[in-house]
Structure formats: structure tokens, C-alpha cells
Length: 124
Image (cartoon, rainbow, N blue to C red; front, side, top):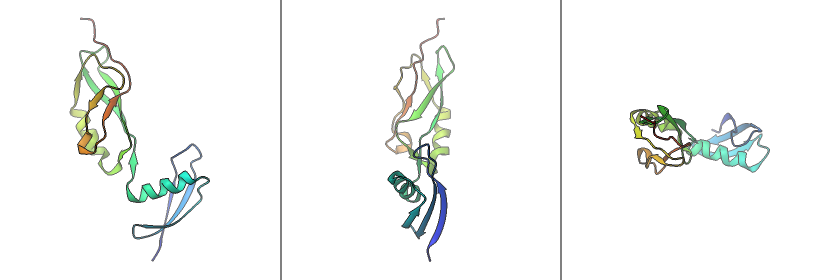
């Protein structure tokens, strides 16, 4: 028996209210999308939901104690809290350069965690 699920597309600023009809894991229809990206979003959300993750990592010897980082690609939604626990244990040495890899192949997902700014060494 087909089931209906409502979701909001987060692909663009429109924020379309989608009505998704599915049977098991099979997508039957998507209504409410104003562009084809909404259809792709709904398919991905049902089969493999992912999100970009942004947080901070501790820096040893930097001018600030933390540097902002993000995942280079969307990360599996079901494993985000596990990733954040691992990042919380991480500490990198200053100097840090923008786009420097802070964590390679995070949780074996093939996605790197990257610094989003420079962090020079503190003058001691």
C-alpha cells in the first residue's frame, strides 16, 4: 500500500513543500516541486539522506583556539553525530591553511573534513 510523506526541499531558497508517494523504498511520485532538483532531492532523501556538516576543530598553538571546518561533500545523515564525536577528539597544529584537510576519509566514507580559514601560529 502506497505511503505519503511530506518534506521540504532544501536544494534551493524556494523551500518547496513536497508530497512524496512511495511504496516501500520505491518512489512513486513527487508533487509540489517547482523544478527538477526537487525530484532529485526527494529521491536522495528516501534512499541516502546526506547533509553538509560544519563545526570547529581545536587548534594547538594558533591565534585562536578553534578553526572552522566543513565536510567537502554531503555526509550521510545517519552518521553525523558519530562524525561530530570523532571531530571533538581532534586537535590540529597551527599554522592551518584554508582548505587544509583536518580529517582524511572521515569514518571511512571517503569524505574529507576541511578547514575553512587560515589559522596562523600565535606569537609566543
